[in-house]
Amino acid sequence: MNQKSGPRGSTHRRGTLKTAGILSAFVLASATLAACGGDDGGSGGDGEKLTFRLAETHPEDYPTTEGDQKFADLVNEASDGRIDIQVFAGGQLGEESDVIEQVQMGAIEMTRVSSAPMTEFAEGMGLFGLPYIWDDADHLWRFLEDESGQQLLGELEEAGFKGLTYFDPGARSFYSTDKVIDSVDDIEGMKFRVQESDVIISFIEALGGSPTPMDYGEVYSALQTGLIDGAENNEPSYLSASHYEVAPNYTLDEHMRVAEILVVNKDVWDGLSEEDQQILEDAAAEATTYQREQWDAQVEEDLAALEEADVTITEIDDIEPWREAAQPVIDEFGPTYQEYLDRIEELREE
Ligand code: GTR
Image (cartoon, rainbow, N blue to C red; front, side, top):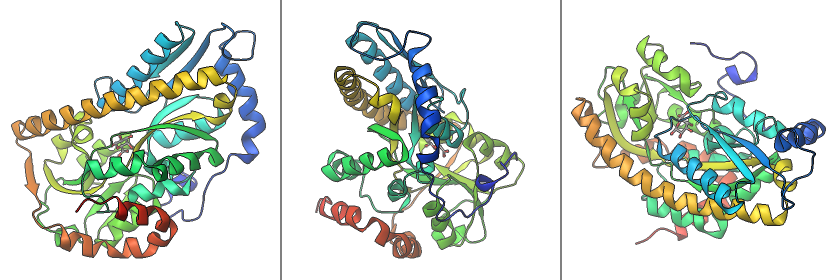
C-alpha cells in the first residue's frame, strides 16, 4: 500500500480541521489565473470565456460523473458556450483528499466529492458518517432539500468552498474477502478500509473492527494482498472499482448514506457575476434530478450484475443489533450534530 506520510497517513486525526485562512492570498492569485484560462482577467457576464476544471474520482459511465457532465452541459448551454466546465473523470486529477486541497487552494476550480473526506475541512460533513440514521433514500433527501441540509452545505464556505448541490450517494454496505459477514459479531477483529473521517473510524471501532483510512484507488490491491479483510461502499462503487473480484461477499447492512457534493472554490465563486452564479445554481439543481434518476437505475443494474458474477449477497433482516453495537458513535459524536440529528428525527415518516 502506498499510504501517504504526514498527517494523512495516521489513523487518528481528531481535531485537525483545516481552514482556508493562510492560503487566501495564493488562492486569489491562482484561482483568477485558472478561471480566466489566459484571458484578460475578470469574470463573467461580459462575454469573456471562462474555463473550469471539475475533478471526479469515478469513471465516465458512473452516475456521479454523468451528473457532473449534465451540469457542465447545462452551464455551457445556458451561457451560450461562454462557460466551459471540463470534467476530468477517473481520478485523473488525483485522489479525493488531494483534490479537495487543490480546490481549497484554487488550483482546481471544482470537484464532485464524497462528504466524508470533506469532514477534515468542514466538521459538519461528519454528520453523514453517523451510522444507521436514515430510514431510506427518501428520508435522506427530505433532509438534504430541507433548510437544515442547505445550511449544512453552507458550512463549507468557512473552509473556502461554495457547496453547489448534493448528489445521491446510495447506501454503503460491508464487503469482505473471505469471511461472509452474516451478523454484526462477524466484524470483530476484521480489518476494514475506511474513508478519511474520524466518525467512520469510530464506527468500525465500535463494531470491534480495525479501521484503516486509505485512498479509494488503493483499496483493490489492499484487498488483493490481504492487507485488509474488507471495505464498505455502495453497489456502483463496489462494482465499478472491481472490488467484488477480490472481495466477493457483500452484506447489505446499508450503514451510511454519505452525501456526495459538488463544490467550487469559494474565491472562484465570488469572482463570478451574479448572473453566472445563477447559471451554475440552476444547472446544479437540474443535474441533481438527473443524477438521482441515473443512480436508482444503476443500483438495480449493478445488483443484478453482482449476482451474475457470483457475489455472495447477504441481506440483513434485523438491523437492530448493528444499530445497538454502533451506539457509542452516536454517543460520542451526536452532540456535535445535535441540531441536525433532531431535524433528521422530525423528518422520519411514521
Ligand atoms: C464512493 C464515493 C467516492 C469515494 C469512494 C470512497 O462511494 O462516491 O467519491 O469517496 O466512495 O470510498 O473513497
